Image (tube, rainbow, N blue to C red; front, side, top):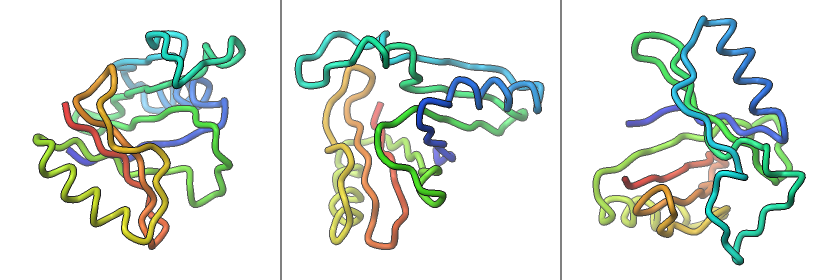
Length: 134
């Protein structure tokens, strides 16, 4: 599956509520940073626990958008990422190695509490890709 992933700076919840109202959409899921299991490698400040880690909104019968709050400077071109869900770790690693060559890694492709692998990389052309292997 390939879907648009919208990045926000502390406004994801507010924006997704507006999109839900505008399209009479269905909020499929919303996870907050405070829902994450504690991890000393990724501490979450008390003031950030209500921020959106991941949201999924169904806008039409087959159309979804995803989103989250991030902590990097988001210029106008960096607010949308391409989210790619792959069915194998091998396919993810192959695509990852190609896209990260000459690009910038935001989050290493690694196991997470919500997936076998997850990572985010901006390719050398400025396109941001988010990989997930479930």
